[in-house]
View 1 (tube, rainbow, N blue to C red):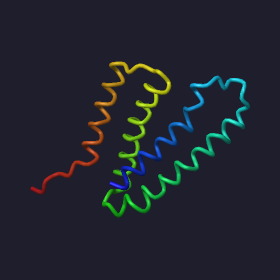
View 2: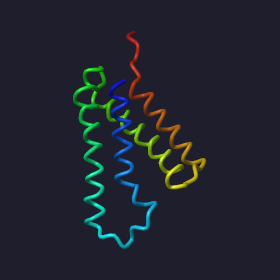
View 3: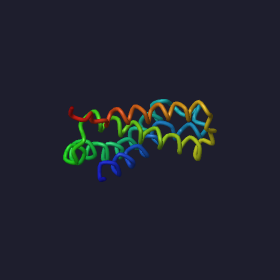
View 4: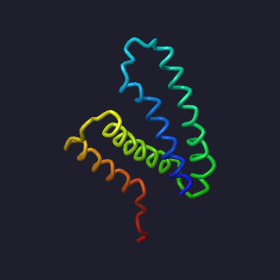
Length: 116
């Protein structure tokens, strides 16, 4: 559970670092300044991501492939919420279909075949 909570926190920082400037009119802001601000925010992403993977994830029995899959799903959910509530984007039917396919990928990532 610590792994999941750390990944959620990490992805909240990551999403804001990468996409937070899209809501503001930053066209006149120097690119280097935007990069440095994003790196400063992303520092906190790493403060949660590294323990989630190295300290908790492997100890909780996740494989590296499973950790990456969990991280990507959390990233997409966090981004979806961010896009809808912060950027005022709309969810379209094709986004929902894409998420369904991703859920299928998660199923197969964690699928353990029965011994015959």
